[in-house]
Image (cartoon, rainbow, N blue to C red; front, side, top):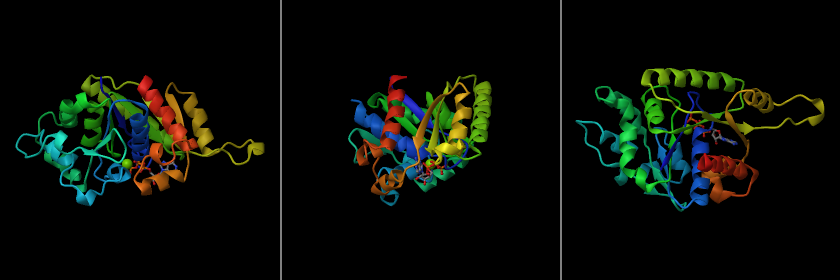
Length: 263
Ligand SMILES: Nc1ncnc2c1ncn2[C@@H]1O[C@H](COP(=O)(O)OP(=O)(O)OP(=O)(O)O)[C@@H](O)[C@H]1O
Ligand SMILES: [Mg+2]
């Protein structure tokens, strides 16, 4: 059974893409099966993060989704998937014109399950499908929630992180009510975690404060440290599993990947 995991938050810049790409790297390294990253964001950061130059693309996830919409010409998703530098890690790349998809979908029936339908025929080839979801409350998010069976919610260590989590939970609850479909438990990742510099002062860092509040809630919680390696690996177009596999940062991603393969 393929596990389909969405990396989502209504809030932007929380680390969705970075987590998606790096967890994909460890899943590909530690398992026999193949892993597919679906870049479902017109910004196409997961595409460039995996070393693919968006300017050279002939086709993208945009074409594969048009294929699911009557009246539009597209191609099957199998035709847009690319191999990456990383063994067993494939990519369904994105490009900027994906931004017009919600407008094109307005007249399409079942428009919240376009992504799910597009993925169906290729699921048998993949052990894991990871969806990088843009910060959106419309059709990108709705399609991602419909396609996924697990939800990873990255939080940044800012004062708005808990507010963002509450908002996302309310949003998910509303979607569950409307669609009569359970979204399952959220897997929370507190990203860019920084420890208190002064252990003697007893004053916790913002990350530590947020962490202690998250611990009082009934979520599965992981922490990923702030690290310059993220930037370096992104520049190299490689996940940390290939760039610095045994780093502290790498171990944090690897623990999340292990949890996802066990749960
Ligand atoms: N652990 C980390 N340490 C340091 N920098 C990080 C870490 N994780 C993410 N970043 C940086 O934080 C920024 C936001 O990360 P990312 O692009 O993954 O967020 P996002 O949620 O996908 O954003 P968007 O909502 O725009 O899609 C990037 O510049 C990224 O390099
Ligand atoms: Mg992103």
